[in-house]
Image (cartoon, rainbow over all chains, first blue to last red; front, side, top):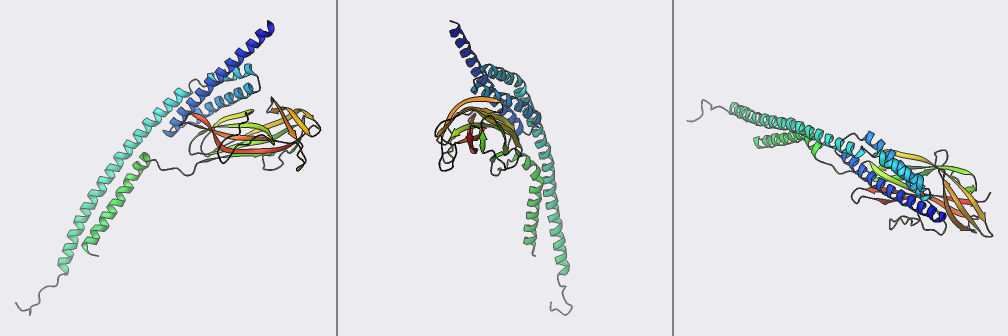
Length: 153
Length: 198
């Protein structure tokens, strides 16, 4: 009877550890996806990465303990990992949104500057061309040989 | 130069200047293709050099090596390094088919590193409950970084190399966000060990 209870407790601890590890693993992967999104949007993710690394380390320890047959420790580590993950996804999402907004602002400001510069270049080129054409025509006229006095009329 | 040639010159100069003026904005919008992406995996000896690797190991003694990874994937990458243990007959990863060894991992390290950065951690290992028979040996327990595993791994006497050979090897896995799972990264490094009872 006691043996059966102990075996049942062990099985439930193993199941609980497995479920906690599986949940932590999915959440770590999801958090990594969010951090990656924030990084690709141009956010500074150093703090997020160090928090995420604390979680990945706990998750690996949980897996290792589970494989070594220590379900209780595995459960505890997986729960610590789950607790540490709180806030990372939300922070990553917020960082990504901020980075996207900053990026849009930068693109807008840069587009305005580029547009002004391009208009100025085109206008100056056209004015320059007209001025050059006129100057060239005047020079050509000045260089034209004048009629000689003894030239037959 | 005639007038038409001057006109061509001015048009070309205008186009070049226009492109130069637009380049800061284009740089923010366009994503240029990245170069070759890859990851490095290594094992170093106890002095963090590619030297003095443990080879003849005895039961009860602890040995130290370092495992390292460097990220050149053009983004922060989430890696898992699996530590596995085999004898001469157990399968290794297959580099041609890019498949990992089917052996179950014992110890693992999980970490995220930024592009261009590296990660290195110590791996302590020791063998206990090593039994010797006439032409074979049996390793019952392998301890990796203070975590003990019941491995029950036999090895036959290798007459060509004179020893009972085992291999500790590490596989590099990387998380692929596109398929949302860890995948074998087709990289492994190993350490041959001649395990003796004393």
